[in-house]
Length: 175
Image (cartoon, rainbow, N blue to C red; front, side):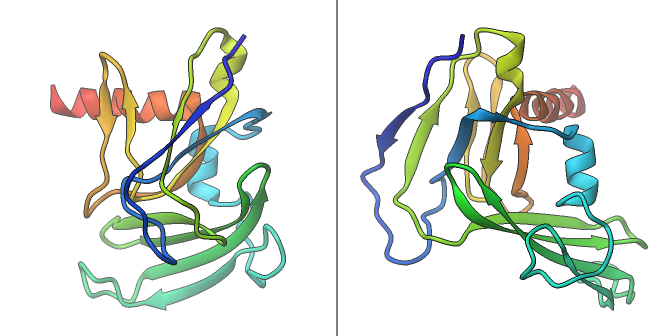
């Protein structure tokens, strides 16, 4: 069985907005219901246009100018969801159908102190533990590698298995 995540306070504090490298969130009681790839494609699981103020209904803007290819084929999406033990969370994404540019991020409605969560995986069921990662967060897997924040970093909501799949892809690209 999974050990409860341990929370350690960081010495750095930031008023208002969260500090970079601050958050790796794990939710031991809420298994992820979607495959990680489905979550990334759908952002919230609903591809129809709607009002972002209604939970799960994304607000979509099509035909914006892409910052890379300058074509007006960029789609902006914003939605929000309530993540247990984390609170109201906003998901933002940009996708260009011409050049493939993609940028996504996740932000909590309430600013929180920088923190660290540690999770020990003891069973297959632990692979379904939900992870909320902002573009500023660092994810470390001992003896394997880490996902560091940076210019191209994305935020996402996934599960432990999704984090491992991302790490595997990064290792395969480096080979």
